[in-house]
Image (cartoon, rainbow, N blue to C red; front, side, top):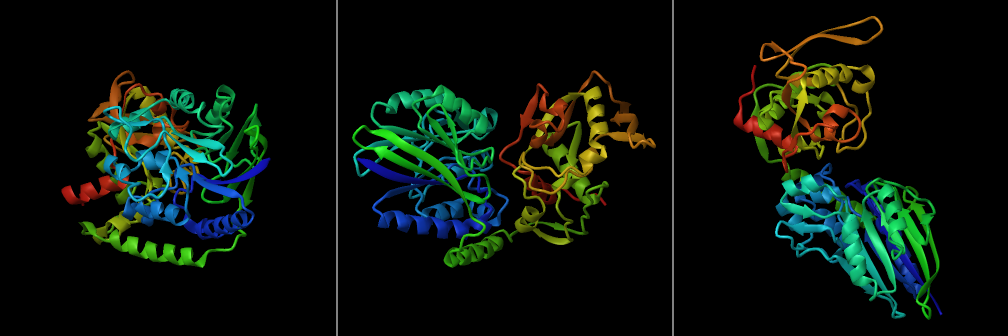
Length: 466
């Protein structure tokens, strides 16, 4: 006898709620169709539903996101790095207090090596036919960042090895919710043949018809609610084996909206913007912003980073600031709108010659005009690199190349072989923007404070230099 099961999944919404009313309408429509046909349906989120870029998430510490998942009757979720390392320990520990679904995650622990009480290493779904499906979950292995927030994160491959060994004799099929990325998902498909389906996220991959590796089907639904993924399983209930398994994506842009949810988002946004309207400081004069020149606001930001991290030198790109800040009362809403990035300050130790090379590279036109995507950056372009603690003398040649004639720190020329404490932003320690920063042997991260928290701190504790 054959039994058909329908699985719907989303990932990496990142609090982009424009398509959420369409997702609600689509999922509810499909749920009714499957119920009318006597078929079972399950709904999963693969992490990064929350993103503090949106006032709804910022003001409620993600609680409104959980309310949205509850309203659509999700069956299980796993967490992404935006849930895991952009909220404080306490905020994450209580994020799912009111969840009506399972949080499936096997590689997160407390500092006492215990599982948090809000997670399960796996969940087991029993189908009408009696077949059993294990739902597993793992999230990205950002060991140092979780450690700074008083969590322990375990290697997801080791965690899977242990969890699969525990469940495989008790279930007929295994589905993994993986917030690891497509490369890791492909490796898992090769190394863990007991996993039948991997629903993936983190790298925002959209697999139109899935990807089959050996006997494992990989699926991914892009980002920002552009798609809802669908995996249709046909099970031979007598043999307890997969008869057929196929994946597809449905684009949400053309779907009808649920107007009730549209209204809820509008009202909740207004409510949360009011919450964020409490004052955090006062300015005697406007702080102007300029992406391509040093400005009062970018100077204020880089000074904040240098003081917070106690660096010899500080550097930050002007594109971190999305607008100028008017004089008068400054609110959390103002700082959130102007500096929405889930980016933390950090300190790295660089040799003088490495720092000089970064200065030259950062002043290239292609770098300043780079339309940066990812790494926590929620702005538009990179902008001019702004420094504090050093004096730079340079000239630009006719071919456009910059020649740095001298760089001094505390009145002395940079020593090419001396290490300097450089206060900056964590995104430069990832990716390939500045290899010297990424490869620095000594890095110190400051969490859970974001850049806008540093701006508020400086406004409250320091006077602004005229």
